[in-house]
Length: 244
Image (cartoon, rainbow, N blue to C red):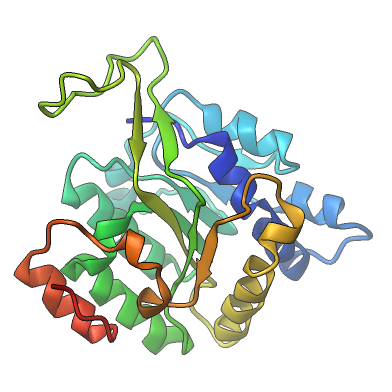
C-alpha cells in the first residue's frame, strides 16, 4: 500500500473546507476545519494524519486497524467524511471501500485508478448514490499523474513485469471520486462541492491544467482506458460513453 500524495490532498482541500463550513458553523473556516472528523480506513504509515493536519484538518483517524473486521463488528470510528486511497492491488479492496462509502451515508472522497469507473462495482455504487441523493459522484482529475510512494520501512511495491519501474514509487493514472453522501440535503451538498471544485485552479497552485468532471461522460478522453473489456464497454454506455 502507498501513501496518498500530498499534492493530491491539496487538490481536494478547498472542498474539505467547504464541507467543514457546511457541517460546523464556526467564526472562521479554519475553526470549522479543525472540528471536522476525517476517516481514512487504509493505513500505510500514518502519513495521512500529518499531511491533512498541515492543511488545517487535525482530526483524522488513520490507524493500523483491520478495516474489514471493524465493518463486521460495526466498530468503525465516528466520522464526518471519508477521505481514502484504497489499495489498488485487488478489485476487492476498491469494491469494499465503495460499498462502505455508500452505506455510511457520509460525504466521501476516494482516490481510484481511472479505469475503475468503468467497472461493475463502481457503476452500481454510482447509480445507488444517484438514487439516494439525486447526484452521481463527480471527479477531480489532476493535470498530471500522481506519484504514489511506499515508505522505506515497508517492502517496495511489485514491478508487475516492468523492470524499469521505480523502486519505491508508482506514477498511476488516478483521480478523486467525490460525493456528498446520502440524505435529504446531500444532493445540494454534492452540487455545492462540485461548484467549489470548479474553482480549484483559482485557489490551488499546481492544479492548472487539471479537470473537474461532473460525470463519467465529462471526463477527458485521456482518462479512458487503453485496454477495454466488454464490462467496461457495457458500463461506459450506462454513462453515455462509447468505448472502442
